[in-house]
Length: 345
Ligand SMILES: *[C@@H]1O[C@H](CO)[C@@H](O)[C@H](O)[C@H]1NC(C)=O
Ligand SMILES: *[C@@H]1O[C@H](CO)[C@@H](O)[C@H](O)[C@H]1NC(C)=O
Ligand SMILES: *[C@@H]1O[C@H](CO)[C@@H](O)[C@H](O)[C@H]1NC(C)=O
Ligand SMILES: CC(=O)N[C@H]1CO[C@H](CO)[C@@H](O)[C@@H]1O
Ligand SMILES: [Zn+2]
Image: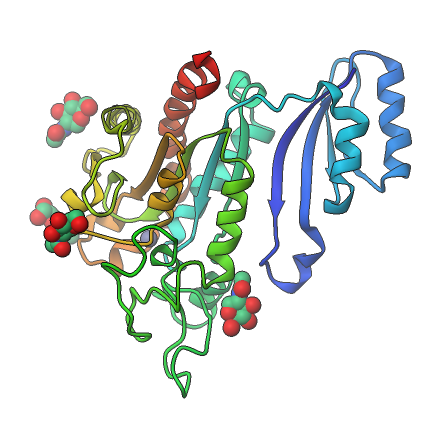
């Protein structure tokens, strides 16, 4: 019957108040083959209180926003042909609040998947999950108060609330607490326990919901011009060679279009390149069996080596940041299409 595609998931569950309305909403792309099917979408619009962004016609796929509680009914109405076999790729930015230059990367990807589609096979054959602001309260705080705020804004870690916030990229349940700080005032404070924070819980639930199809997890940070992979204790996953190879290809694709003033990307295991780390989202996702999981560190602002000023954003670089990183993401996506676990049987 219909061909529906999970287009993107609006995980606004921890967004600021005016967006709470969209908690759990999902946007589906619908392809219809005849007029009757197109009319069926009209009737579903009223039955299920759908918000139709774009009506489907036999020549044009439609876009439909489905409220969370209606997802199951919507899927059973139209999803009999629905494709739940596609690989999933997840892109994420702003887990660390101050790393503003990571946002253009995910927004540019959305642009290339929804508006300015030049690689249709990546749209048609992959389900993309994009979480542009993984740490919304910290991000807002870095705009309103302290530009270099990194953590989330959770309280209750000290008696007087002198120090606020947990480093979300130390709060995930992999090697939790081994090489992070238990001091609330530290920038690398890991929180009261693994997944103590709603933001890391939200990422976990997205990842677990799609774990059997999730092939590539790409967590964008700033800065360092480096693509990092697990594990944070220096032990390589069994497919470490593949993880490294795909990262090199992604890096080379970005290098080919980067600004000449920026260094080439490098690639490596995070512990061997920097230091042992624990509780990263990357390691957690790798650890549940997702084949490719990366931290992608964007180039430093004006090649600054300082960990704070390197995260600043040159307005001229914003579009380039999105463009060049998408060149790399596409390479990863194509690799997934050719090698996903689904193709192996
Ligand atoms: C990093 O973790 C590995 C594995 O647990 C351990 O052997 C090594 O000593 C650690 N390195 C540091 C600097 O703590
Ligand atoms: C950067 O990478 C390109 C291609 O990957 C290579 O040709 C070039 O020599 C590299 N530059 C440096 C400085 O290593
Ligand atoms: C950052 O460090 C690199 C390597 O040491 C050096 O080449 C570069 O000039 C430094 N950048 C700045 C802005 O100092
Ligand atoms: C997303 C989320 O849970 N944000 C919380 C961060 O911490 C502040 C302060 O405790 C809460 O008000 C937010 O709800
Ligand atoms: Zn970061």
